[in-house]
Length: 588
Image (cartoon, rainbow, N blue to C red; front, top):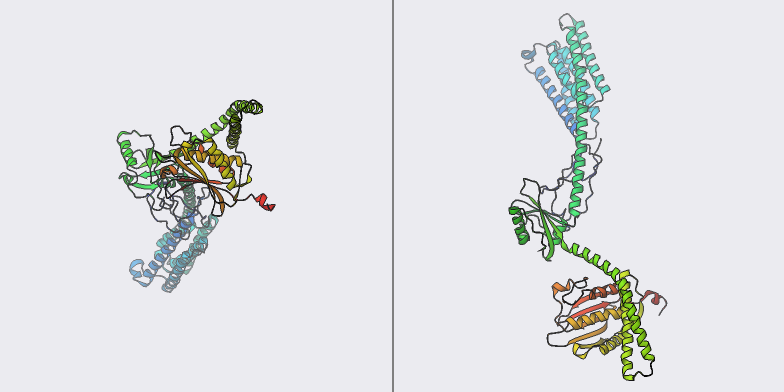
């Protein structure tokens, strides 16, 4: 388990803000709290990678290295105690040593060795087993020499050696630990024989030596097994902790990417945390919402929360929220059963409206397919009857013009049906190279012949030089008809007839056709809704005119925009995509 896996530890889902701490060495990275920038789209933290939940980092290595350092520090304490006994009032503590020179030499060798081992243990590029093996071997040799030099200190030295052997077993394999215990027992046996050979003054029993050897082996086995259990428990805890942090990170990502806004409000009605959706719904991504009062952000939302806390009843009616006055539906729930912290979920009702619009448009497409058959049958009968009237020799010339108008309108109605069906089926438009100046004039002449003079005035304007653009002629005729009809209906001042101008212009290097009126204009609140299906300000309107016009422009690669007129009125501009690349390739 050498080295940590590079990962990001995701902290609790809702935790107090604190700065991230840098990872150092093998240190365990701290949990990352949810903070501004994590949920805010304006944050500068950048994208973050989910933590791995399958492999834990090697926290045990850091713990063992710290224990090795403490073991080396304890060895230095032992060497200092030996120096105090040898160079201090040792006779008063343990009596006169047998060999003072040997005791002094052992002390002078042990103190520098303990210091070197302490420094060696602090290096992160060394193997802990090597440091432990060298250190315990030195302990055994020094213990044997001190036991021979000071026989009165043999029991204390043996007890201290038992601890050193047990500590070393934490870093060694079982075979190496048993070998070290055997080496210590052999060293004590050599010292015992050495003392016997020097003279009869040594009266230590052999049973003491056997008990020391048994203690060495027992301690080594016990600490090795205990260390294995501790390492296994630590490894399991690391693994479970990494899995929990990984799940917390996934939880955090789900909350952050939810389309539902989430606010965490504490007992003082202050917003502690807000996800991206809540900030975007509010419309203030630069400053965020953390730390602000709920009443400051939305007084109505604060009032509903207070009502819910008092009565337990939630008001499910939509409310306006944020700078853009979007409609949201709030829902409340406590973070914990006995907590004052409340989670506020803000559902954007416009998403539901758009889904409903999509379903309605899909149903309308299926309905238009069946309705087209019902309309075409009487339309074909009317068209056939008109053709028969045109062939009648008894038809007066004054009525022949009316028959011609009926025939043209039948063809236009059929073209409108085809356009609506093509829009429902998403068929591609048949774009043609059109001379827009002449097309606008023909359209205006044809439209004015059919409209009543009291409805208003429609005139052609713009440049005189030819201007070409690519568009399906039937679609362009339908788009201009929708725009002019809307201008006649909404683009007039009270008590005055409408004045409509249709002009072919060049805007930003691209051909365009503009329909301009001199009416009251479009309010800003309504301008943002233009082009949405079923949106209308009239009791008799369907809300599909501008939507169909915009979709027809889009299918032809063009763009329909509303342009406010500073002097008053409204302008709807159809900007074309330019020349047909196939025609341009042929040099036409």
